[in-house]
Image (tube, rainbow over all chains, first blue to last red; front, side, top):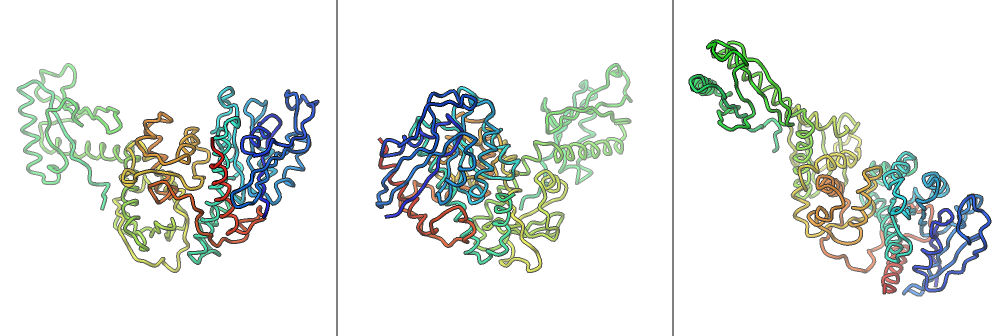
Length: 203
Length: 328
C-alpha cells in the first residue's frame, strides 16, 4: 500500500477545509483555532497548521488530502507542503479584498508545479462577487506566461470538488501525453511543439 | 482547391426614369456581351439590394448627358457613392465598372467579415485534409508558390521564413494572393526547422466562429475536451464555462449553442479552435473507465511528482473510480 497526496491551498476562508470534507471518508482533522487575525479574514475559526482528510482507494492505497494554512505569514510552508504531491488545487475567494493579489502569491509559490501541469485554480463566491471575473484571473495567469486552468467553483458542492480534481488529472495526463507524443515521434530533443509548451509554462 | 479570388459576380441595378433606364440597361448588356471578362463579373439585376445601383444625381433629371451616381453596397454593409462621368460613352462606363469591381473586391477581401470567412474556409480545408493526410504533409501554396509545408498530425509548420505569421497577417495574405492547400510529400524538408502552427490555428478558429461550426465538427457525435486548452487562457469569460461543460461530458455544437453560455459565434469559434488544435477526444462515445496505458515521459516533466509515470496513471484511475463510487 502506498500513499498519494493532494494539496488544497488558498487564502483564509477560501474553503479548503470544506473541500476536503466533501471527499474525505473521515471527518477532516483540523487544527482550527479562534481566529485572531481579522486583517486577513473575519471568520471565527481558522486553520493554523493544516487540515487533513483521507480517502481509501479501490487499489488499497490511501489518498491523503492536505489543506495548507491560508495566512500569508505561512507562505514559506506552501511549497514545502506541496513536495511530493500529485497536484495542488488552489482555492481563491472572490469576496476577499484583493483576490488577484492572492492569485499572484500562489502562482509564485507553486511555479514549479505549474510548469509540470499540476496546479488548477478554482475561484469561489463568484455569484455574490462577480468582479474580478474569470477572464481577469486568466489574464493575470497569461501575463506571467503561465498556463493553468481557472474555473469557478462552489466547494460546498461535492460535484464541484470532484470536477476540480478531474480537471487536475486531465491536466496531468495531457502534459504526460504531450511529452509522450514527442518521445514517440522520436523528436524529444528538438520537438518544437513540446519546447513551445515548456517554454510557455516556464516563462 | 479553394481560391479566394473566385468571387460571385456583382449585381448592378438601374434606378432611373423609365426612358433612360431602358437605354442604360441595353448599354450595360452590350458592354458585358462585348467584354468576356466583364460578363463573368457582372449581371444586371432588378433587385432592390443590388451591389451597385445607378441613379441620377439630384437636380439633373432633365439633362440627358448628366453624370450618373453609382451607389455601392459593400460586403460589410457600408455604402459609398461614386460619380460616373460621361456614362453614355461605352469606354467611360466600362472603365467605371472595372473601377467599381476593384473597389468592391478589395473591400470584400479587406473587411473583417470577409477575413473571418476566409479563416473559416481555410480551416475547413485544413480539417478535411488532416483526416486524409495519413502521415503526408499538407502543402500551402500562395500566389502559385509553395510557401509552407504543414504537418497536421503534429501541428508543425515548415517554411523558409521560420516565423509563424499571426492570424491577421496570414488572412490578409490569403485574401491578397490566391491560395490552395493540397496533400504533399511525406517527409519534412531536411533544412527547415518545424514551428508549432497551433497558435495560428487557434486564432483562426476563434475568428471563424461567426461562420458557424466547421463541417468536421458537425460530423462528430459528441465533443469532450482532453486536457486543458491552454491557448484559451486570457480569452473571454465564457471560455471557462465552455471548458467546464465540455469537460463534464459529451456535448454537441448545437447543444452548447442552445445552452446560452455565450453567443453562437463565440461558441462555434471556440469549438473550431479546439478542433483544429486537437483538444477533443478522438472517440465520440463515453470513454471507458479503465486507465489508459502508461506512456513513456521525459523525467523533467514530472519535476513536481514523486510517482513514476506508469504508476501515476494507475493512481489517477483509481482515484477517479473511488471518487465516483462515493457519489450519492
